Image (cartoon, rainbow over all chains, first blue to last red; front, side, top):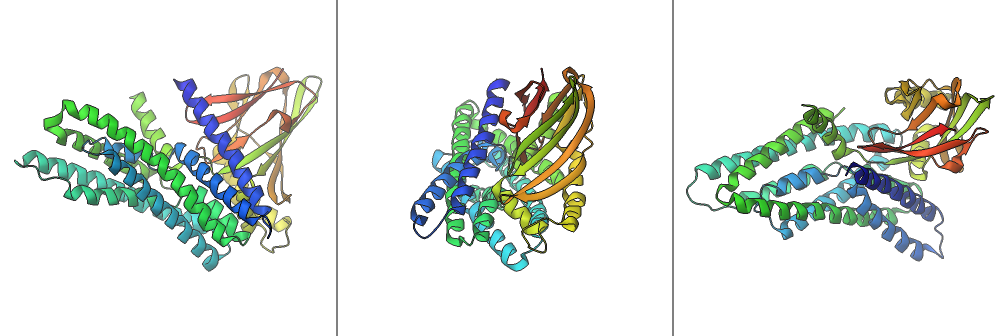
Length: 248
Length: 172
């Protein structure tokens, strides 16, 4: 099992290494004649890159999985959540990179580090709050005779998406920045969007798998669904606390 | 308990870490009678990271890294890697040793940032193993067989650690 996992990690790293290189060399080679083909190539590769990038460790997959492990979710919801995360991811990366670049210009990296620490802190606090909210919902459900669910669900989903998506992905930011520096502004934005769509797809798949798993389990505990919800809430809180403590 | 600690340490890494920087690692091995004397390492950053670094490193924007700029890189970036043991895990007879790089240099080559340094050894070839990896997986170090120059026969293999991926260099 471990060997397979190691093999996967290895390939995720190597594929990214190759794709990263292809993107960089192609962007450098853009001229008036070949820009259309290079644009489409870079956008296509950025999508692939995002797909693989999000498959590596990170990008809130754990949170999405935990969120849907509470049961009651459906595939559409998981898909939507993945995409909400990727849209926020893309916007935050584009906005942060462009504004940092044009406002601050120098010392970009240090400012980025500071910003990313703050964003990570906010993000982990939000994750803790999502967890608490789920626990609260579970308690309420336990003591309430009739079930009229799903209205607060919607809100907690947005919180999950914001919590995960708010921290701009350094991978996307690097591509955007690279394009800005070579004066390929539009390509930078398009590549960021393509990459985020790729990442969203991967995150959605994780959510869908989690829904599939949770639905199977919840058949057993159908009447006591709040237990699952409480457990996933507690796990999310723990996750948030550890993320918070990991911020340097 | 062990499992629990494992989960607690690993989970945060899984959420925020994955390679964002790629380093091509070139190694030039100097040996004398089956003894490894020293290895000159050359780290070449990927294009995108290089562009980002050049913006900060090349403060007078002349396309070169001069003496002051190199000093800045050493104190603010390279020395900082000490806590990660310079991503270079040296094993002498299977015991880990701290890496002590000397002769640090940095320059720009083909628009890519390069770090260069030496590690001195003076051990028999059979006793040395060098593993290259970043435990946080923020940086991926890529060591290919063709990146190595050595008179002594060598072998490159994968480092199988459950949470990150790296390469091992040993001599035959």
